[in-house]
Image (tube, rainbow, N blue to C red; front, side, top):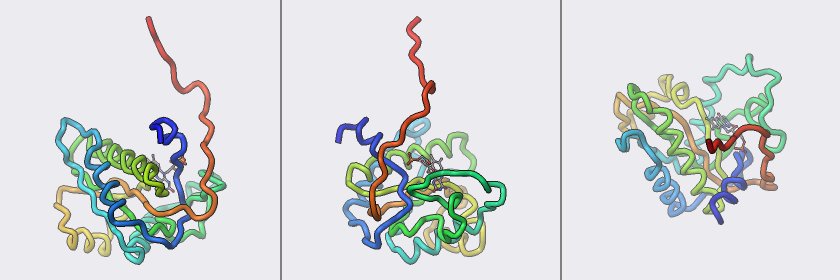
Length: 193
Ligand SMILES: Cc1cc2nc3c(=O)[nH]c(=O)nc-3n(C[C@H](O)[C@H](O)[C@H](O)COP(=O)(O)O)c2cc1C
């Protein structure tokens, strides 16, 4: 698909089929993440892909457990693809996706968070090109800030000076894929002199 068309087509999907994605597609999405722009050319970010729905579900519950929803009452994200903010009965912050990619970046590096989200953006675009559904998820730091989360980090040999910054969910959209979302006006300008 032409790139701008693909960017407009990409939506955050929070309803997933049970079907797992192919390992070959996952490898392409990881490649896209690794080829993201990165501060100073340091290539510091690291990605762990969890290609196991039961483990994704456990991590998704840790992602919700760490969240205080009380101050979000009245907020709204999406009627078609409800988020944990829209629907407090949702138990996993990963919405039943069969695969999650965890983007890690250094704790003490100024551009650690932008680096991680550049990876995530490349990954969701590649996923869209492959016909996969995806969603970027926050609260990486909090998700692993508990004994269960810390045990996973040790199991995966994540260096001490690295922190989970965000997640990319991957799977197949269950039901209708949402339409392109209109943009708020007046958010860009071109200055020529
Ligand atoms: C920095 C960032 C953090 C996000 N965190 C979450 C999240 O924790 N949970 C979630 O369901 N969606 C999350 N999203 C997805 C946004 O809610 C989504 O991009 C936004 O509502 C616009 O919808 P669209 O992606 O379908 O255009 C995040 C997106 C970004 C860029």
